[in-house]
Length: 81
Image (cartoon, rainbow, N blue to C red):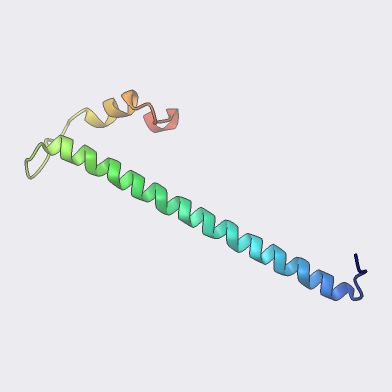
């Protein structure tokens, strides 16, 4: 392996790698967040369809939301609060 002739070139390389890695992490987090938003929106849509049962508006005071969280196998404990 050839020796680095200029320490500044090496520092610049490390800076480029670090910046590239940080940007990649940010893109990955944004993609994951977008996926979660879509998932939550779809879950909400299913609940609204179920609650409304074809009606224009749902009945208020229903216990569906808290009950569905207790029975959903994909929900975590923090979702039950």
